[in-house]
Length: 478
Ligand SMILES: [Zn+2]
Image 1 (cartoon, helix red, strand yellow):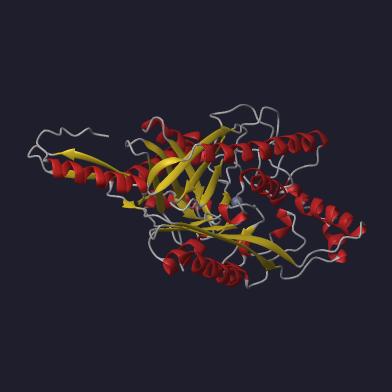
Image 2 (cartoon, protein in one colour; image 1 turned 45 degrees about the horizontal axis):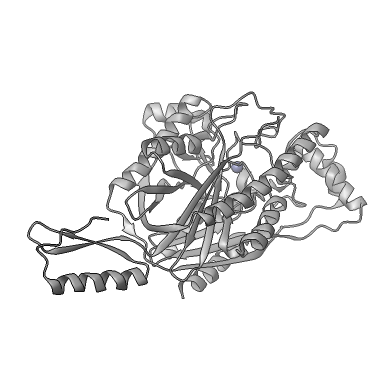
């Protein structure tokens, strides 16, 4: 705060300035007054309508937990850089709180996040609407719990290591949330948007064709979301505390055996190096059908990380939109129906399949039927809406949402809307109606890969999700 030189100020002005200051301090707005050369008072509204708290913790496994996401035996051979989990706690003027967790995990299963939500409620008093547990979907991150359980060869030692690591991560996540809440302190929030262009719609462009398309200047086709939404968190003294940013793309540049955060990891490192003392946090928006192409080299991965960091810096260099006060949060579980649950007769055939994933899946489900289990005909799908001021709306959706969701909801709810996939639960791909109609990998019969007791979603998943989002957004906006 600048201490004003008082000698040119009349007594009345001094009193007025003191009253003014006390008034705003009482309403948690800090005003710093300074005197211009000619003695006129200028006011600089520095903070704040918000409190923010940031915490981070390393999550790189210390034991040989396999790398996740490609469905094979992938024991780690070292690390390029550490894996991180980070939390941003926010509190508005009325004391309403929310915590956003970002992480370098590939996929957080419901069995894990439910334990986190339960303990966060007990220890920190946050209900389910007040916490979003996001994961970047990093394929150079570790296995967790029963996520993609049939993807990997069965290995008793690995089962044990994954279970131990998952328990440790539950505890670490709950502690991280507590730390972020303990760190709550006055802050200003502001919004911006940059761009990065390395995500390619992988359904509409064959990966093998990509290098020659680039060489020949042939444009890529299919929907993409190249926006880079940015939320800047600043302390009253101007210190940059946190940079939250998003992008819609699979972190699958690399498929090797070395721990790293893939392109989001490199982007966060670069931003934290350019802004010492700040914490950079990444959310995967709706990148279910988007790949970083071409790929498979560390050099490309670093390049995409750099492109994303540049997109963030471009946003920060523009005039940002201040986020005014008021935090509202809403949450619900929507039942998404399967087209048809799988039968014992079908499983008997699949158990003899050449496809190892499908065979393991069928064997596991047959055992469940033998044990008297009845398959559920739907899956409980988490949907969130958070409103920050009048300027920012965060929609949080479970699983691998395709880019159509981001395009649709940003269109429906306007500027300042973030649509985050990969929230709370990995589940499977979540096709839009368009992608479901087209079929193919993200829209077709892929649910066995994720261990669900069905092959396809029902055709109305987009409708059901959109109805829920509409309802929750109305709740937080009214
Ligand atoms: Zn994926």
